[in-house]
Length: 496
Ligand code: ADP
Image 1 (cartoon, rainbow, N blue to C red):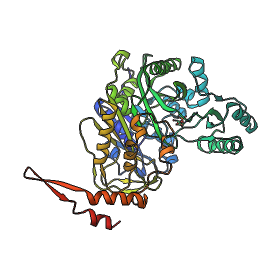
Image 2: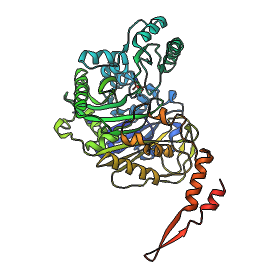
Image 3: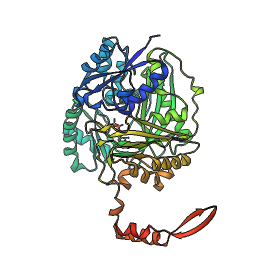
Image 4: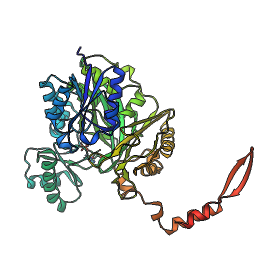
């Protein structure tokens, strides 16, 4: 067993706050490795010791390995939790931690390297007997060869950066004439974003659901699965709404996917929290990639499984366990998470920044709010615009959808614009409610975001005007009902 009395957090925002909460419950002191821009934040106020590691620009702070290591050592931390994003899947960072006797809260360096390269990950998975999306992952990277392979696979094809992540470095090629340009630009992007020009090709499955399995390896070598999450609601390949369990998945398919995930974890001798992502289409499923870290959407798993994944990560890093038996891990009810972004939902989601005014998070049974901001803090343009996550749990999926709608309607955030109206529109959509949505959902139904209510055309405005002018509001006075004409209807609509 290794003792962790003080843990450094190489991250920011809501995930830093999430880690601080877990540490407080475990009696561990926290050191926040933060940038100069993140002084006015909740994590800064909640941690035991803030250490500034550099300026706002991520390359000089959150992505700077040396600065993070030195920051942790200067505060006598014994371990580093990388959260998600930033250095969380960087094998060099994990190696440097080891070199400096700092416990990296995550899998070992070999696993990060193996799964960080999407091609080596696919090779391992195929050896285990799990299907991968048909494609080409060969060493010959000449554009001519890649075009030939696109033709062989059949369009549409997706070109991906081997070292890619975060929904970036992917290009969809729909016909042969687009192939050359798409491959060349994917290679250029791969070099500038991930430092490697290597790409691979996959058949683009355009009727698929994104289903992923949460796995966990304890320090004794046991691998567990904590069932699946569905993340089909995506904008530009980035998740917006996630849920657990999947909205629609047959028991027989679920059993196979979970078993395959366990087999992959065992083959990799995986330690800690990891997520194995699959595309599910036409009663068949294909491995896509494995993420060797905590996921943004981990709370939905925590809600249905009744576990704390961050505490489990830290306990495993300090060689404590086993934490569960597979038989203990029984899902109950349904959980949904909405990512709250500081952006203008009526203008293609352009980021919204500035000081935050009053906020109200409507607490209630089965409602959880993970955020990294408070009134008076500032949303800056330097980082990802996700400022909070709202998670709800209820007995069934439809009740969870209803609870999420109410929760979003009651949430108040002054000072900046958020995507809450956009989230509500999705939650009211018949295809989302039916659970049949695929990863094409947003591009199919919300290709240019949301229309502002005042931009939705004469026809709708006239319809609403008519409804309002006919509306009677019912006022209850002393237990009696009085029917009155809505006094505001005309004056409100005249101003539009
Ligand atoms: P990243 O590591 O950047 O998150 P992933 O490989 O996990 O990239 O893919 C992100 C998303 O892109 C998937 O959830 C899916 O919507 C889409 N995608 C990736 N590969 C395919 C494919 N072969 N066919 C259809 N969609 C795909």
